[in-house]
Image 1 (cartoon, rainbow, N blue to C red):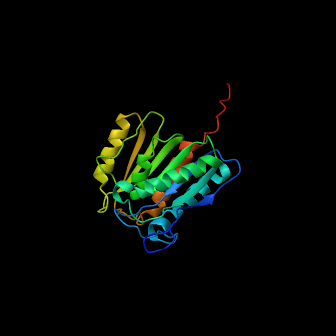
Image 2 (image 1 turned 45 degrees about the horizontal axis):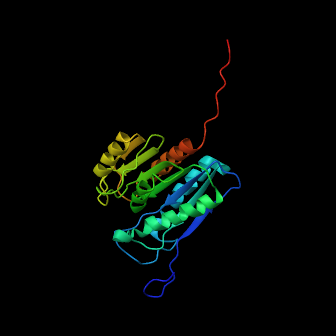
Image 3 (image 1 turned 180 degrees about the horizontal axis):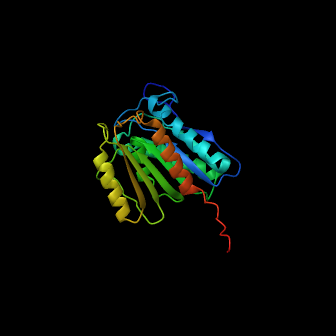
Length: 220
C-alpha cells in the first residue's frame, strides 16, 4: 500500500512466536490525532513499547507469544480510525496462528485508546491502557471476566489522568476487574519511572493469562 506521495506504508508484526504458548500479548504503540506519515519501526512511539514486550517475555518465557504491532500511519485520523483497523488486522493474524488462546492487549496513549475499543473482542481477557487517550464518546466494553490495568502519570499533560480514572470507574461498573495505578512524578513518555511501568505491566499480563500452579496443602 502506498501513501499519496508514493511511499510504501504497511502494518507489520514482530515478536516471539513459540510453538505452543498458553496465551498471546499484543503490544500497541501510540501516535497522534492526525497524520498519514508512515510509521517505521525506529519511530519513537514504536520503540517505546519494545521494553514492555521484553519485560513480558522475560516474565513468561515461552508460555506466551508476545507480539508488537507497527501501524501504517502516525495518526488516529478521525472516522477512519486507522490504528484500530491495523489492530484488527493484527488480531486476525494472531487468531489464524493461535486460535482459541486468551489475549492481552497492551497500548500506550493512542494505543491505549485502541485497546479500550477492542476489549470486547472475542478472546480478549485483559487490557492494559497506559496513559491512554480517552474520549467521552468511545465504547466502554467492560464486562465480568475482563481484567483491566489503567496506569497514568500524574504529571501527564498530553492525555488526562482524570479521564483515565473515570474510565476505570465506568469499566468497573460494567463488571470488569479494574486496577487503577496512578504514577507519581511521571509524564506522558513513561521514562522517569520506566522500570515501574515495565514491571507492573509484565506482572499484570502474566497473572491475567497464565494459570497459577496449584498449591498442595499438607495434611496434619
